[in-house]
Image (cartoon, rainbow, N blue to C red):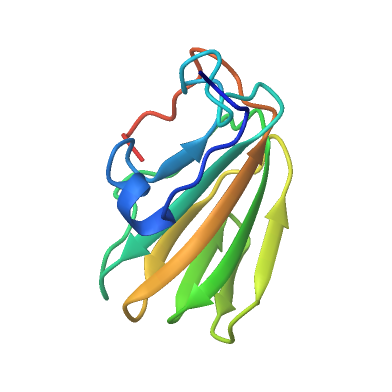
Length: 123
């Protein structure tokens, strides 16, 4: 019986779905199923980077640094997150990419969670 409660570990659960913990892609009935938002626990080694920019973004994004040093790249500037709790928010239509300057853990929240929407490169 589903009690409407899910207890997990972000680091362990992240391995199951490329880091994504919550969103439309979780099974209906799972408390982590949501069309309102998506949440990702990202663990990145120093030097990891997106090989292709995210373009034509349809969602709003929020990335929070948990640990490490992480750079978000935007068309006209970059943002260095290097203190725990540093964060950046970007809106629909804002192209972006990223680089882990040190081993890093970040949490990303995107909204809404759009079925069928996928960036060109697996995240």
